Length: 531
Image 1 (cartoon, rainbow, N blue to C red):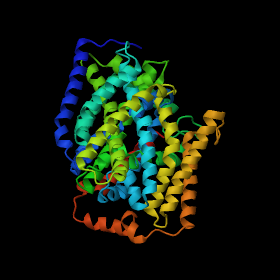
Image 2: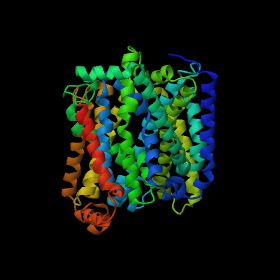
Image 3: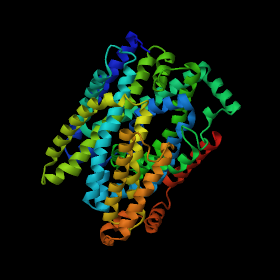
Image 4: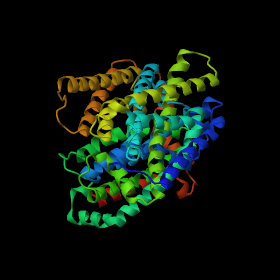
């Protein structure tokens, strides 16, 4: 597929990029004067800004390109990743977020040091840096380049990746999170607006009748709950696999959680998370349904990942086409800007300031900018490797299967069981890493699947259980940590009762618990309707 944009659409795209870079640079001076401002936007963001920024940053290449491609080939079951993750968001906002914000951390690995020791912090920070660079940043660049190659076929994927890297660097590196989060607010609104228009056009082009016919026929394309042998999302994987991956994405992912750490209070952070939860449910209607309709409108596409770009280019009229392409690119560049700031924060706060004591805030900000540049160069260099996978979603899923379980095990056990100690946490992380390494080595060197040909969602809990067994065993065989050192990082019923007292007299529409219940109910209604 190759297309040539008209003059109007080209102008809209160019003007959009100029505006985004200008808007980001406008906030650069305000965001680069201190570490708090550069890395966490001064910790003064309100929940609407956090919500839209999270939504824009979370609509990554795997969502816009990968999940739409999966929906094109297998139906709406891929939406289970989002639906179950919304329930995970409520869990995270309820139990983990208060610890993160009240502890004053800059990075998620920093929380591990406070709860356990620096060994766990360094390990988690290191693998997060690797994952952010070679998994997320490279994936975002590849997806954006794949999209724009349709309209600029003369440019290679690598050349387009360089162009996007320069655009994002122009506003993210000078201004840090203060600039990026404001740009993401605009891009989140634009993305929502553009995807709603595309959904309306897809429905009007015979899409609504097609979806109705699939529902009336009981076609599996329109079912969320699938058999155990389903290649997309088996029902057991929804229960035992997705929650682990979902918690890693929303509760341990520096890229996303860092935006929540900018909240001016725990309440604003929680409401920002709940807001993005409601917006995430909309993905079924604005991304998944249009992709299923694409199966009807454009059968037999050579590459499933191209269905959403195909819908945009074929259905959007002049003017709106340029706007929608801008919205899609906005989603991908928002992810990239979030990643740049998160890796800069991780390296600076978890490594640089530890090895070089008494560094000034100005020096820390400078180091963060240099790291961002290095990560961009590495991500561009890794883009050709990403293209070797069948789809972006498969690339992301396979990598995450090995990375997430040990980390989630440590956080879950550490926050809810005070007997888990620093030795158990560290060796649980290392044990999980060794198990993952052996799996990858056997698969790609000897063509042997350690756990057989079972669905990757069913492999996730196996790695999780292995890590849990190691964590618990080592913890019970070694002395417990000092309770006074860890009491502020372990959940207890006392915390729940204190929050209940604080909510006395708060109107229900301002109570995060009320909106949490509404969101949970909404998720189960959707699950029931498309079971």
